[in-house]
Image 1 (cartoon, rainbow, N blue to C red):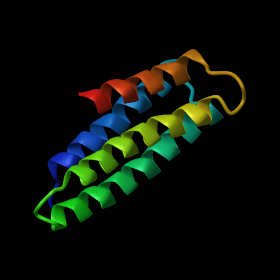
Image 2 (cartoon, rainbow, N blue to C red; image 1 turned 90 degrees about the horizontal axis):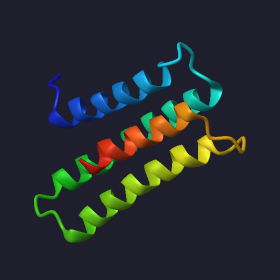
Image 3 (cartoon, rainbow, N blue to C red; image 1 turned 60 degrees about the vertical axis):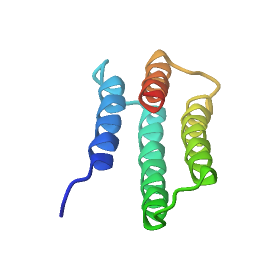
Length: 104
């Protein structure tokens, strides 16, 4: 099995937010929920990228769909973090890490 550039990028993203979650030596239920949701969202994104790659002519609408997906990924993480009406500093750092990774 070959490792693609996308695999490396996605693994780096997961590693970054995992490190943020572990900064204080513990992973809370909300942090774990964010990690699980981001992993699910990344797997969905991988499937969408594969579909786009199958069609050699990438359309602008496909790019817009991937952009919307990035926004959805962030919104999902935010929704999980605020589900208990408290966004901890670790959760905020995780979301900021996601933002930085998706912007670059």
